[in-house]
Image (tube, rainbow, N blue to C red; front, side):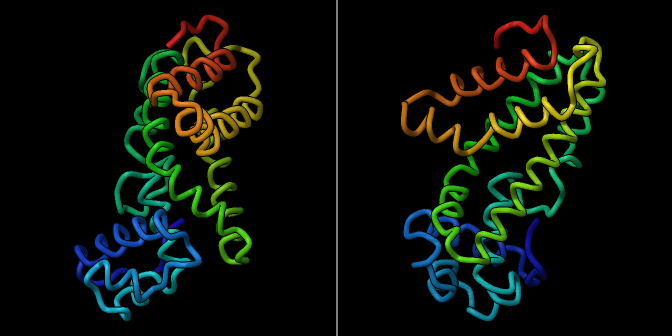
Length: 208
């Protein structure tokens, strides 16, 4: 997903992404300049370019940090909590754990994804949005495969169907509609999404 090189000063790299995220969410992608990001981050403009190539690279990095919760450029399927699901016992237990992680990730990333959606008239941002959607569906497919191998999974469940429902349910759009617009709590939204997908994973799933 993320960016190109890294500045030698790790603290500067973190400040750049933090500053950019704040400015993108407040002012939008189009109105935010690399100069403004550099000033907010207390970094040189050339440091921003050296780290991320251009403003689009900074936007991509801001997205990745929001989704992953850190600055490590690691695919989500390789994170420790995902790998641990295979040893998590039943499909119900593993999915409850995964739903918690995904709800938190979605809550963190919804603001920057809203920025990306709003700026999609820019060809570069449109390409980034399409790439992120492909990555998210690929993750959903990988997660569905992990979960459907676990004890208690529905024997005839379709991996592609579960992946598609994951892809469409645990989304920034869904989070924004329920939580931001309709006033649900994060926990209420997580429980709803958990139940929708649990019904696909196993006929015996209990409500969250």
